[in-house]
Amino acid sequence: MYLLEVNNLSVDFLVGGKALPAVTGVSFQVTKGEILALVGESGCGKSVSCMALARLVPEPPGVYSSGSIKFHHAEKEYDVLPLNKKDLREFRRHRISYIFQEPSASLNPVFRVGDQIAESIYLRIGKKDDGDVRNEIISLLRQVGIPEPEQKMKCYPHELSGGMQQRIMIAMALASRPDLLVADEPTTALDVTIQAQILELLRSIRKEKGMSIILVTHNLGIVADMADRVVVMYAGHVVETANTAEIMERPLHPYTLALLSAVPKLGRRSGKLATIPGNVPSPANYPCGCRFYGRCPLATSLSGEKQALCASTVPEILEKQKGHSCRCHYSK
Ligand SMILES: Nc1ncnc2c1ncn2[C@@H]1O[C@H](COP(=O)(O)OP(=O)(O)OP(=O)(O)O)[C@@H](O)[C@H]1O
Ligand code: SF4
Ligand SMILES: [Mg+2]
Image 1 (cartoon, rainbow, N blue to C red):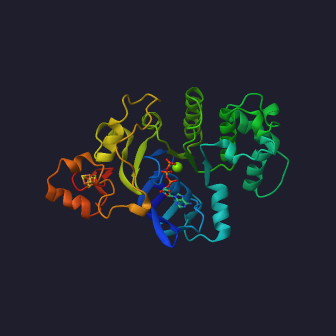
Image 2: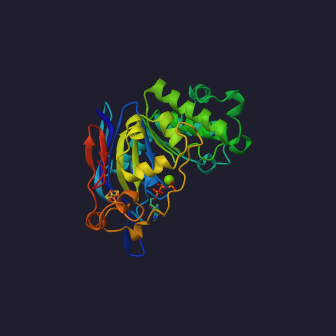
Image 3: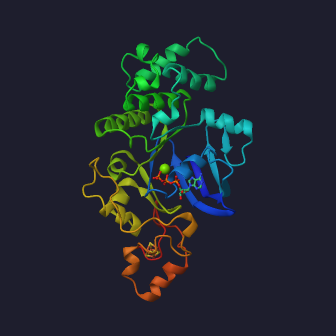
């Protein structure tokens, strides 16, 4: 049974009277306790897909133009897109939490970090009750590896390092006891040692709490280390999805192949996405056929007749082997 099922989700942005398709027909699932990685170059729609999960893409300019987001909690089923305001608020408070790249952008500089964590706890319990809140804050700070929590809870964000601020963000995210944690490039702004510590923390949280995590990253080394399954996005489409070992060993889509061959040594945390020749087209200029056509090494090796299909027709995403899907007319 899945915790989350995203089916055929499309999100457009209305810009200058035009609907720009940021995310088109995206489908993926998250099982309980799994770490799912979302990868792809900048602008491929990773963040928009994640924000959509709690309907956080602002409307306007955003429009949820198709699809469904179903969240199966043991006590309650949520069909996120049609939720009314009250149920949406409840869903956001209890079921899903986000952490982003820049903790400084999410932490309020004028409040002590302990008070900010307390706010998350109050939101969860639905009232301001000082009873056990202080103990819970201290316990959360301990869980995220912050030393001397009694002192640190009195600090303002600027008094803490970037790594400590990110731990505070994780503590705030955990305060609502979510079933799903969405971590959108949570370590990109941090140096390598701190990055490793934060990733280790996310892994231990998953293990201890059985929480599901969606991890957005540019770094395929992190994917190899952390993720159970991978969703590869290109220009607003999901182009490939499989479990991590499978996709690393037998990538099917030419884009995934290009991403992987751009990484010299997998498993190293230095494995950032190196550049693939050309650019991701912008939603205003998506080609009418395969969105990877124009950069695709496989297409250039094909006959003109075969290429014509790439140029004219969007490939469907198809399950090629059990649990391994790919969107390409010619991948095996
Ligand atoms: N508020 C907005 N208005 C118009 N277009 C937007 C808006 N937010 C995102 N987009 C567009 O949606 C597309 C997907 O953006 P998204 O932020 O999801 O990419 P991403 O994969 O997260 O990239 P990155 O790796 O740089 O974070 C991009 O073309 C982006 O320009
Ligand atoms: S459909 Fe054609 S252009 Fe698209 S990935 Fe496959 S071979 Fe390349
Ligand atoms: Mg993003």
